[in-house]
Image (cartoon, rainbow over all chains, first blue to last red; front, side, top):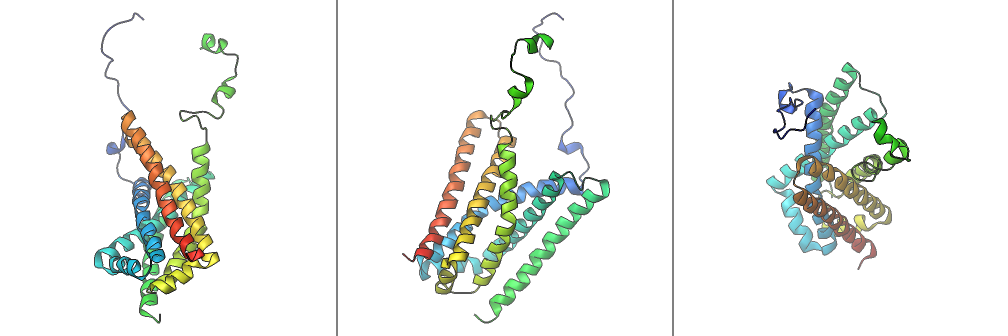
Length: 137
Length: 132
């Protein structure tokens, strides 16, 4: 073939995400990354909490004011769900790492279990947490 | 093909071993899994610890967090999650940021952020443990 100075031919590119019908396993994979991204920045709150506890009653009071506010509770609820969802998703990926669970029904079942499990465990943790807060100190 | 391979004395395996574009082989993959597995029991333990602190005042929280076993679990938890999240964010940056300079800056910022969060959290726990 002779060398030429033509611009590269417009070759067909492999299809990307937007041409696929959304599927559960695909959505769970995307959400796994999004929850990981959120958890990353949420560690700032963890650091704040620990430093507030170490700083004394005033600093801890400020943190408690944030944690007890509506926006604080919404963030913590979302954070709890993201944490559990990412953990269950991680366990699913660890199962897949062993080569198991790739069958058509198995992978769907694993993905659905992760989704249902994350919501159920989050709600359960919050019921226990709110009961603990309302109970004796 | 045959001409290209004839010019190399090293076998294809030797050229590939321990390499890849990052020159680190499977290190990233392995550490990501290692910290993922460590995260499971440590996160469960941390959630239990946090649950016991709900609604308690600073003095009680400080006392519980400063207890040796609780402090050690929290330190392990922080070490594992910050190492894990650094690896995860690295992949996100490499996937979506294609400008070489911006990528370099963000990869550095990622490392700085994770180490800063880890040390700030560890400082809080150690301060409570040592009571200074």
